[in-house]
Image (cartoon, rainbow, N blue to C red; front, side):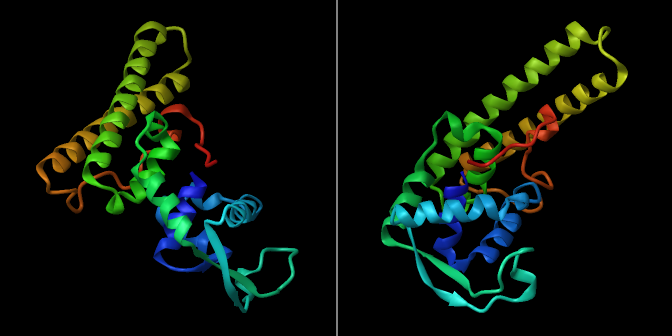
Length: 207
């Protein structure tokens, strides 16, 4: 998913690594902003070797842009290639089951403005089924085990169930808007994209 997000951002403009990291945080929220340089730069190298991005020169580095304990050399600017644009288009059109998971859904949703309506609908409907399954699992757990778990664990499970119910309602609104051809309106929708931390206590990763 990090590959998809980087290619998507580079279709907008050429950027160096520091800019990409900042834009990932803006596009994908505070959890994604935790992407380290140790994850980002190997991914950029891999994309470059694949021919999907290329170096477009260097820009002077400021003190703010230089990670601790690294040299203050110029920042390499990356641009997307024609092959990279084709690769991004392929990823954009993909709507398989893996796109319904937390991290993958969030990344795809961030680029929905460039995704065709049929693909958006498939992903939204698949995500709704995924969250509905999670919701039913939590309901069953609470029904079976509410008397056997401590009050704090019980409250956490209730919080997860509430998050699932809110997300299902949000997804249903989006699906209805897509089917009507209106698209999402402002300011409808949750304040942040759904996170697996709401319902599972874990933090989704990017691969």
